[in-house]
Length: 215
Image (cartoon, rainbow, N blue to C red; front, side, top):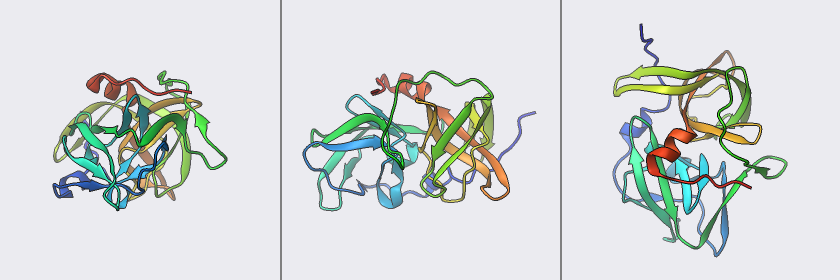
């Protein structure tokens, strides 16, 4: 029987008002974009993966055709595709003023991305959700299903990486130097433990016909 799981995060998508999203920083020529950066109101558009011409984030970032702007009106890019709920994802095509890089922003420096080979069950994975800092755990299931009021999503990566209320959908998950997916939602918290669910990055790349940036 399919287990009904109350997600902490994805319902925020339904609360978003239509309109123009804004970025957290303004673009200068060659301004780098790294996996782990965040844009939009309250960081609602985290960079879950960088791709040729832009980046991948959550479907909660905005609707297809919306323009992503900086606080001074500088255009960061345009949301070229957005799907919800399956897969909950979007991709942003950036302007030439921005330069997506095939690296993850880390505390001690950039971490190179070398691909997106799926990590098997039991593998170590880490991510940063914007509220929890870096958290690590293991892959528990690569074909998990969650049900919530807006529908059912299958084929998810279930991990023991903790998430908290306010964690940002679209945040990255990485195993060694291979990106795995972007955050959909989770249960529990980082005090008592819990589960988090990620949309596989390869599914998103295939959905939009994108090419992952690597180092």
